[in-house]
Length: 281
Length: 307
Image 1 (cartoon, each protein chain N blue to C red):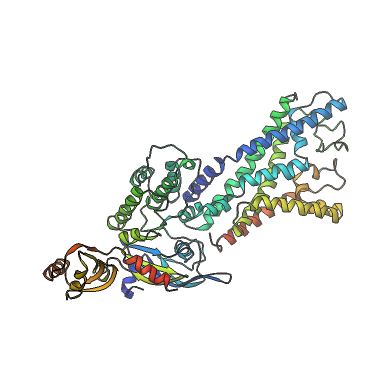
Image 2 (image 1 turned 90 degrees about the horizontal axis):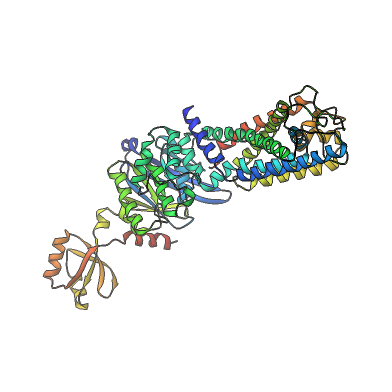
């Protein structure tokens, strides 16, 4: 246990001192600003009065391009090539020798990556709140008229989809919940990518894998019925509003998405561990 | 390879036989056997692509052989349990956590096994010639400093076996001399078994007890610089052409090669002072006589050139 803790400490040091997090900070700021601009402009146009810092985050969390491409890609590039990179640079050799066995080394790669998913979403939340405050949004935990869905939740002229809030809802808790859901999805995708690099240890693979999955997802969307597509599409399932009857006609049951992500997590963790015992490091 | 009796095998750090490694249709290693004893420095020499690094990966548990059997520090090299032996490994072109100092890297690495305290990082950095107080991140290190840091992580926990892949790569002449002394110290003072690879044949010959020449994935021969046979070969330089004939007539030596008109290699059959007296007695004008330090080089050329 002590050895595993020391391995995790080493991986945390490697992962969280990486300068790649600067890219994360830039991305948090950029998507936060874009979401805040969009919500601010929309609220002004609809004559809804004040909007809050949480509205920008709610809109951001349900923007397929932001969540399913920009943020997902940034996260994968920051946090999911550790295993491949260590093997390319041979840091893996001196660490695995000390781990005593490869299982412990795998655990030390998985746990920090899961933590990184949570921290990444916390950063996204922080970026959106900061950008919205900068754009003049009110800093209050009460839901705005916009958040209550007074102007509709799926305006065809914008990308503003979100599940309407309840009048007495704490918007901070609601957005933390949305962030944790997205962190689960990102962690599952990240772990699948990490497991892939066990078999194919090249550091450019994680980025390529995400692009390939998103491309395949888009192509699939053209060929199969929308209802079936909603069940198999990975970026769609990442969006919290995909589970809301107030937003889409055939919402995905929330339990199915939790099951999907947990299955992907457990399958990737087990598959990665199984492969790692058999491959050359 | 070397004649090891079954009852001696218990103390061996490395004892492997028939090792083969095949990637697809390419055979990288074929029927390699080797041993390493405590306190012994064994060199692994061969051209690029000979299979040295693959062999090191197998011995350190990073890779499994396609064929063969044996143990490294008691661990079965064919094990599929994912366990690895407790050895020190210095890899070629080493990378660390680039944003942290060398000392912090060592503290984190040593913390995994937990067999040495934090003070060891300071001691071992000083031992390899790095400043423990240097807070510069590793990304600012020169290749030579990285090599020293890599050596520090390999030896800091005092493993009974240390594997050094190209340890002199990137070192300046002073660093190479330091490295040579340190490797001998690890074996002679600390009793470690050391397995090293290098392309610097003179260095390998100077530091190793035994050298395995590997080529085309096979261990072609073993050269022992300290064997009586190797130590009996001397280089003799004489003053005049006539001296060459006089040398050939001396019975306490055998001329085994003429490298230049006035320089030859001889194999002495008696103690060197006795041979020198015989040469002087035969009227040979001796310009210089010294032990031949190029035996490994010749063995290497015979091995590699023969294929």
